[in-house]
Image (cartoon, rainbow, N blue to C red; front, top):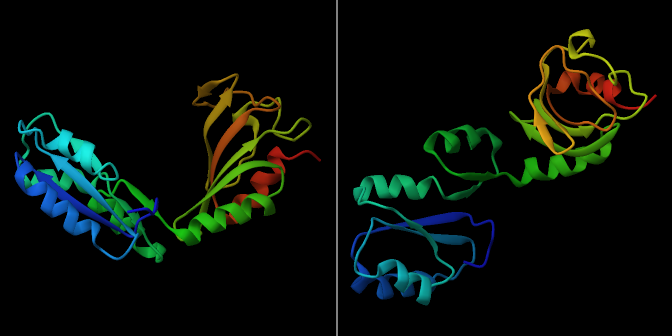
Length: 206
């Protein structure tokens, strides 16, 4: 359970099962791998189960519910807090449908880091979506770029691109057509891959 990006999440639903927890969790700790985590879902126990796990098994992730949801719903709520690491990007949508809280694809994460340095302009981060067909660029509008000091409705955005949000002076703004881009605005831009270079030209100087 030392790995912060586990391959497997083990869900344990519990209701007043304290007398079984020590044997159960000790057995799981004997697994000869660090690529797993334990998610303990407590259905409002009143036998001190949560306190026992906190004190004796601090590496276990605890979800403490305010009422007894039962076995099945307890498992479902545990899955929603699970971490899933996938190597095949085509199964990411399936993991999302199941309700997994965090999905990690090493290939997509690595691609985003590399693309940050390949993209033109003042790029803060790049997130890759839809099997490399779309990207979210977090960038700063550079002084002197063609989009600065213009209302969005007067900017010719390439098809398949949209500004999702703008951060200015620590305020998050959802822009409309009358919104005017200022130098150093921090933008969240979603774009299909075919339009990325046009987006770069809009917000990069020169």
